[in-house]
Amino acid sequence: MTRSIDKKQFILYYFNMEEIITFLKNHPFFSILNEEEQKEFAKILISETFKKDDIIFKQGDMGDRLYLVKDGLVRIYIVETTTEETIALMKPGDIFGEMALYDTQPRSAYASILAPTTLLAITKEKFEELKKANPQIATKVFQIMLKILSKRLRLTTMKLYGQF
Image (cartoon, rainbow, N blue to C red; front, side, top):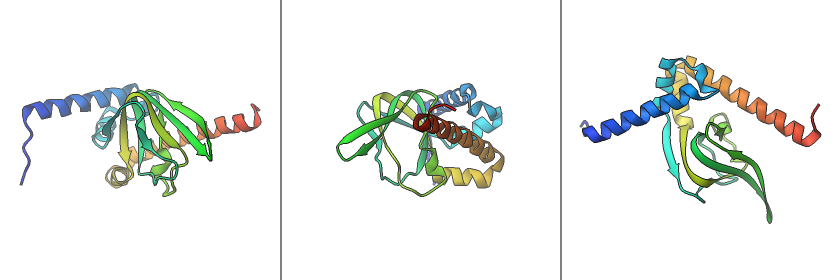
């Protein structure tokens, strides 16, 4: 049985899709995808909205998705016994949770909302489907994730050992 979509729903979906594609076109990493690849990638992104003080995930949770901050502010932090340490503030355009697409390890930190926020998410399941259906796009997304992980590793090294 086919589910019909009324005109209002279709316009909302189309508007959101165009908005997501524009976001990807203007993103410093996802702009490496050509227009057709951006459209295909946008189809598998899920838009999620959060309000201030919402917890996206907890340290120790099993991760199943990567997030792109469309708008708002996200705090990434770790908790050790009685202390919390902020390790990053994610603003529009930032990406986090990327390791969940590649391994099955628990989340290494908490993520909470500091201001009303919209996130674009890709689940591990959808990413696996993308790898099979369109390996060219998946390869480019892998390259993006490698750039992000490399940048974070350098920043961590600089924090721990100072600049070289």
